[in-house]
Image 1 (cartoon, rainbow, N blue to C red):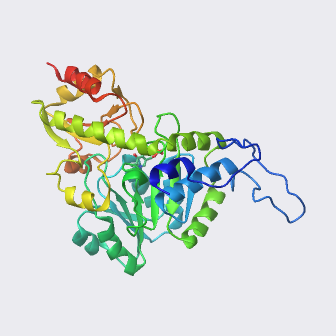
Image 2: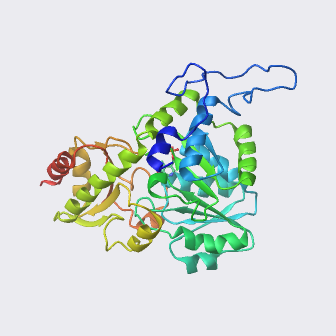
Image 3: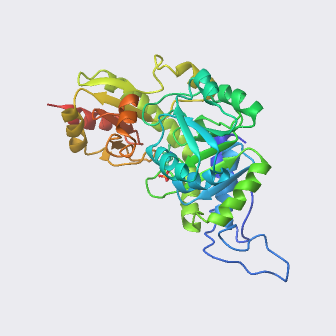
Length: 378
Ligand SMILES: *Cc1c(COP(=O)(O)O)cnc(C)c1O
């Protein structure tokens, strides 16, 4: 089955006898046992729920993983993932990450005795040098947030696999439509389903997809024990969003090409970070490992005044956190997603008062350009 079809028919399991075309919302906390020591396969919704299972099978299928678990948010998925590690363990992560991931590593994981080294995972030599005997995982975002750096997943897997180090990839930005890390050698894929998978800026969700049955067993134990599972209704909303994933990604990406080109020509814009530019440093790797460049653009304007004025003037594009939905959103990483990242770290990565991030939605490109153009006027 092709990807576009899998988005719609990604779970072949039928959950009722009425012939309902849309998976029913099984709004039940618990399930009756047919007899002592017997189960229908569903016991209690923290462990299994048919609506959520339908979603999880679809996601596992799209990512080519052995299993997927649906969480109440991307951060809930990530916090549960960190329970795989113990005091004394060491993790290497990309140095330009979603701000919430940095906060989790530096505040919660650090307190639990798990040390994190942040570096450019796009540099395999730097990565190799940072590995210690206690290194248990490498955590990669590609493209990174918000600077759009690219990591070669197969090259990292070639380093981590022989050492038994887990390779974890946050695939929120590209989604399995454009990038499938598991066939490239990743062990675990993380998603904020809030973004492109749901796609409508209306539901929080998160996913962990695993490459092996062993990881499924270990993470399913943590999942049922810590309990940050996705509700049946929210599972249904993500199932519905997923049906149009391929077509949304295709159009959002096409529009973002047009917008990125236009931004580059504006006198008040200094730099545009967009993976789809042939002169982007990660372009060749993107072409090799993914089937597209996504719909995220960040750009640096000439002054803080211009940045603030743009955020106040945009009308069609909303000034709001998040990304990946049908509505275009602009964010100010310096004061929003990355506000908790230490100042010197933000500056070193180029996350400053002049940097804006745009998530290109499904509106017409001409309307988006007219909104941006108005926001850039003197
Ligand atoms: C939003 C986001 C997260 C966190 O997900 P939530 O659903 O907001 O909890 C993690 N990683 C990336 C890349 C994100 O964009």
